[in-house]
Image (tube, rainbow, N blue to C red; front, side, top):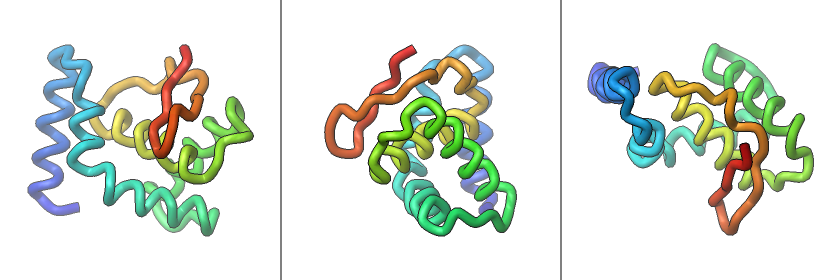
Length: 110
């Protein structure tokens, strides 16, 4: 990971620690496209090669436990959102259920 990306993520983590509830959204705006491509590749292959792919597959299993009917695009979008929350230090335990709301958008029912 480049130093600039690490700095950006650290700033977001600091904002989370100060109580900013929008840091995961900002993380997804900055890194969501690239992270989504990585998630899509790991979902397609189902293989782990490093810590990131292991975390992705763990999130995939958690989402599939609650929504086995999700299409791949919706699954990728949800896992990407969850990873962004994890990157900035937000808790994902409250993310109990996912419903597709159109396109790549998902909504969480808690």
